[in-house]
Amino acid sequence: MGNTPLVPNMTSADAAANTPQAPVNPGTIPPQFTPPSAPSAPSAPTGVQPTSTPQTPAIPKAPPTPAQQHASIFHNVFSLLAGGGNRPQMNPDGSPKVDPATGNVVMGQASTKRLGMGILAGAISGMMAGMATPPSYQKFGNASVPDYSGAFSAGAKAAESFTQQGAKTAAQKEADDLRTRQFTTMKQNLDMHVLMMGVHRGDREDMEQTRDDYADTLRGIEDEQNSGELKDDKGNSIQLLMDGDYSNEQVLDMLKKGTISSVKDQAIPSNVINAPNDPNDPSKGTHPVMMYRIITNAGVGKVGLTQDMKDELPNRFASVPVGTPINVNLLTQEAHTRALSKAAGNTVADWQEEYDKQNPKSSSTTGFDYKAWSAANPVDARAINQILVAHKGQPVDIALDQIRKNPDFQKTPQVATAVAKLQQAMGIKPENLTAMAESRAETLAQGKKGPDQQPADATAIAYFSKNVASRGLHVDHG
Image (cartoon, rainbow, N blue to C red; front, side, top):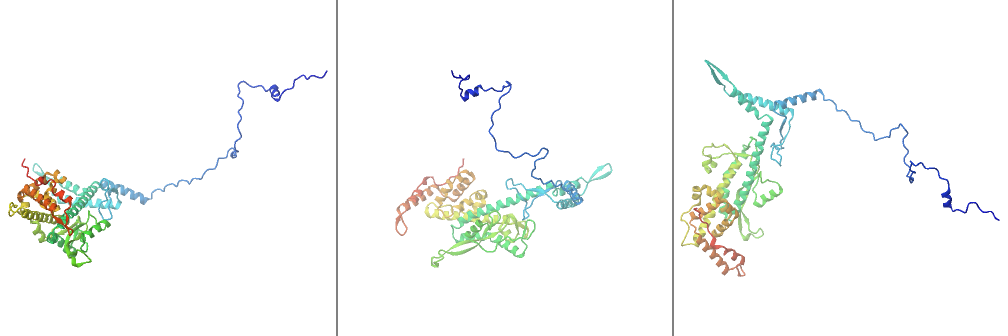
């Protein structure tokens, strides 16, 4: 019989299952397989530190030299004596530098030299003020003991402006005054614009009258400038007038280019010329044009008072000696007030003439004079002069109607009262204004216009007939 194998045939899995295994310690976990990783850089030998980027060692600050220590001590001492080491910073033109966000002057560290000069000036000023103040005397029995407290107080007050706080206060006042002058100049330029808009709706006579109101001021500035006597607030020689005359268009162009400033420079009427209606056709005639002179830095200039200026403003300058320096802004403002009042009077005269022509059976007050009415009602006149000039050239019924409907007019009781008082003094009746408006509307509706004889514009007709019954202002006695 054949040999029978003792172990039956086994698969490889059976063999592996029957292969003796190493005993496993129940307290251990078989290690997990970790895939090979990329080779790492060889580590540095033990005891060797890795290299790093070299750093530049900090250079020790050199100790101050004896001269620097000496200067620092002096600066600290001067700062203590001067009430602080800061002083106002200045612009290149010498005006205080101002923070545009707050309007406050900018303070900065002052040099030792500046502090020292301030201390010296303060000491001298204090000494002179103290010496100029006589002592008072206190009685003690038969003895009189001098009391120098008044002299001490005067000296301290005189020296106060040279301290940090005193310098700041003075610089802030200077900056505020400069800002006020700039606002004044800008307002005068705006007022001039309104005035000339009205004057240009008049004739050559209106323009020449306005020019003449500024003539004395302009002549005074020219004379002093030519003689070299023109000074600013600090007594420095200045040149106020630019050379040449300029038209309104040229002035506006210089403003756009920044050649002149609306808050520093001022345009005033200087001459009236004839300009051609058509530069290419002289046969079409001419029209008057106002020309202007430019006052630069109008807010800081002063001009000596002349006799002509005194004669123009006797109430203001009657007791002021000829030659006294007067702010240019004040003189131009007075000239503008005169010109505005006269232009308002011309407007009223035009209205009165038109009203009488349209209402022959119910004319205005005979002999009414706006100048006399203004003198008797100065507050009312000041409230409406500019309004009257702004409506120059308009028919009286249209002008009064537009004035009444203006929102600013409705918000200002003083203006409403003044216009009503003026209308009443002129003898202008509301019913006659209504009749004038209705007559104009009818004329426009029925008439022809232009070379082609086309009917009047429908919009114009509608405008003139609108609310005619509400025309006219009444004095409210309630």
